[in-house]
Amino acid sequence: MLAFIYANVLVDISIYLVLFVLGAGLGYLIVHLRLKKAGKTAAKFLEDAKKQAEDNRKAQLLDSKQEIYRLKQEADKEIKARKKEAQDLENKLTQREVRLDNRSANLDKREESLITKERIIDERKNEVEKQYSKAEGIVQEQEKKLIEISGTSQDKAREIILARVEESMAMEIASYIKEEEEKAKNEATRKAQSLLANAIQQYANETVNEKTVSTVTLPNDEMKGRIIGREGRNIRAIEAATGVDIIIDDTPEAVVLSCFDPVRREIARRVMETLVSDGRIQPPRIEELVNKYKKELDTELREAGEKAVYDTGIGKIHPELIKLIGRMKYRTSYGQNGLTHSLEVAYLSGKLAVEIGLNEILARRAGLLHDIGKAADHEMEGSHVDIGIELANRYHEKPEVIDSIASHHGDVEATTFYAHLVAAADTLSAARPGARSESLDNYIKRLTQLEEICNEFKGVDKSYALQAGREIRVLVKPEEINDTEAYKLARDMRQKIESNMNYPGTIKVIVIRETRAQEIAK
Image (cartoon, rainbow, N blue to C red; front, side):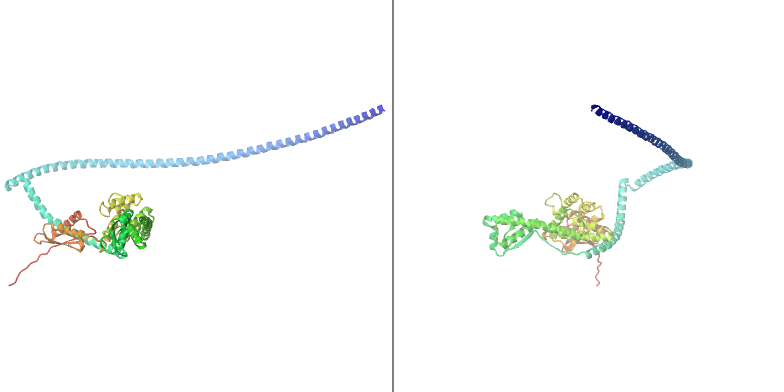
């Protein structure tokens, strides 16, 4: 039994060994065939790669040769251009050298000519010096003889001759000045009248006169006691809060508010009218109303400034300047409202600028801001002109505007046409009838001073101030002043009036000379 099993096992092992040998042989055969095929494929791939590399090398070599050829062509072109430029430069240098040679030759000839002329001039100069020395000796000899004959010294004779020449020339000079002044006056008057008439016709405005006091009407005289209050506490509270003096006198049913600051006076007037109307006159109520109307007035002033800027069309302007323009509404000069005057000057300056071909907007801007210093003169040191210049510089206004502010009163010389226009418009606005007012004492004093200045001149008989001091007529003695001297006298009077007086507008000086011949027939 064991032998049979053992035999079966051996058979199975044999079968397995045979199958293993067959499988190993078959696997070897398959691997060999595949390796052989892979070798052929790799050889073919290597051959193709070599062929492709050779083709690429040939193509790159061809491209390199073409690039080298192109660079060579470009280099040849550049070399030819450089050679041409060098040749042109050489030709120019040759031509310049020829010109320089010609110029050098001409200069040599001119130098020779100048040397010859200089020699001739030296000879003539020596001759002239000899003649001058000879003439000087003759003159000295003649002078000695004249002194001996006349018995007068040389200095005294010179004084006599100069006096005679001065006397004879004075009439000629005065006559010439008269003729030229007449021509200039006629031409200037004609052009100025045309320009100003056109400007005035295009702009006209109402006259506003204001004073430094305001009057508040009361319903009855009992209200005065309530305004004063117990021991004067109400009136002291009003004056302290507003900075205005309240005058309560014998005037029936009225109190007077006095202050040089028109803004404060307006606030006090509104406060007083409100207190009188509602009857509650108490210190707390007074402070409340003062604060209320201060804010309201600030708003009104800003709106007035904005309206002025808008109406004149001057464009963008600094907010602080707008506020100052609005404050001009409550400023006055000789009774003339400051804002109204500034608007007049702005419009007139613009019209005049159009007539002579300048920028109308810039002229209006300069005219509107020419008196801006008056709106802040109580807060800053200096005249309103100096303050205006400082404000204009601070807010970066144009040089034409600054020049107009600085020169509109003649403090400095105007450097732009716009400054001259603003000065003319300022005078025109202030000098028109009814524009300004002054006290009776100042008025009489100004007229008296004007007549006294004219009466101081030699040959004046009488002087009369007319048209509110805007014209002075001077009667001269005909036996002492002739027609030519009358023109000189008028000019001298004008200069003295300008240097010794302060006055609004202009003053016309008229010198009148009259000769009468009278006989009586019997």
